[in-house]
Length: 444
Image 1 (cartoon, rainbow, N blue to C red):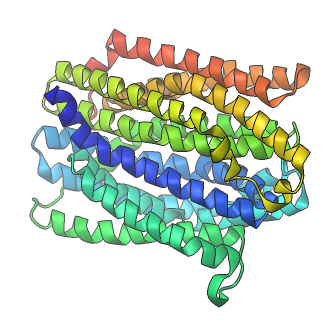
Image 2: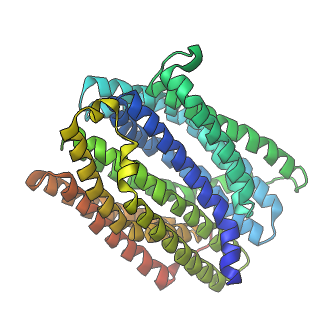
Image 3: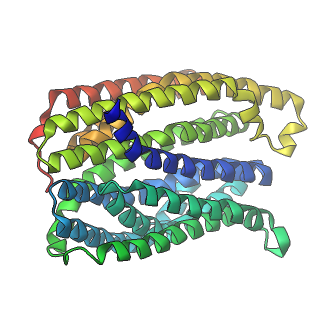
């Protein structure tokens, strides 16, 4: 029992931090649903497109946590510091590159928006988030140092503080409370950027104090090259994951406006359920990396297995609760205009419950794959997770999505393709881990 408790001590702040982020997005979407149905429709595709771009850079920067963890396991504090310096340098460059991608993002959004009103909101939301994405990278670089060393509580508390600020700012900036300008979806984006900037500032101050007692960093440039070598495939994995999902979301836009609103609401809840698994995945990555840094691959395998057992059990419980509370949860996404149309409201709840049931069916496999992929990345097997994501998403899943769209274009049928997809990708990741090729890899 003690090994599981030790894992939970590391993982719970990470899992709660991810839940905290999901709750923030959940509240954002509820506010936006009451702003207008167009704002709710715009938030998911614009947010997903932003993360296609920003998620790549964040994953590359975040991979520095594996270097910190392995160096920490080996007792090399100077290299832990050098890894963080390298991550900060990559963050600054990533922020500049991200700004250059804003025009491309606006053009891509114009290809799928259902109306000019939704497109205007998508462009505004996307642009503000991309301009402030540099704070995401800098905050990630700071968090990676503490996570790699197993000091996950400070990351959680700072994250909580930032997200409380976000939620507090939302009604003032979205609805124009207390004389503030009513900015709608743009206000939600500004609140998110302000939250991330605050997190970086606080973590940066704590990090500066933390590094004051460590040996001077040397070799940051060489470590930066190695972070890019292993981190770029990890970033591509993130991009492929988000891109395939975003394409799926765009395809669902052709089913109908009400169906899209229901699907987007369900995906918001889905993120709330799966978000803790990102924390478990990061915990598995850290534990595996620390064990490898100590030269103990068997301990890495045991810690990964135990983290998987804890994570899958947790998400099973969350999925059951969500299914039992499907109707009251869905009611939180009902706008005033939808509430006045009883026929549409009944269809909203009926379709929503169907999608909730399907969501519960594939959550277990999705959670297992996320955690196993985290363990593989902690061992440095980032090329596999990238290639397997590419094959599973673009050679298997998306062709099936487009076939369903052509022959039976309904939301439940499209969602059914996701169940098949997560089962396949989970099995592939598990087989890779069990074969043990990761034991021969060296990151540092």
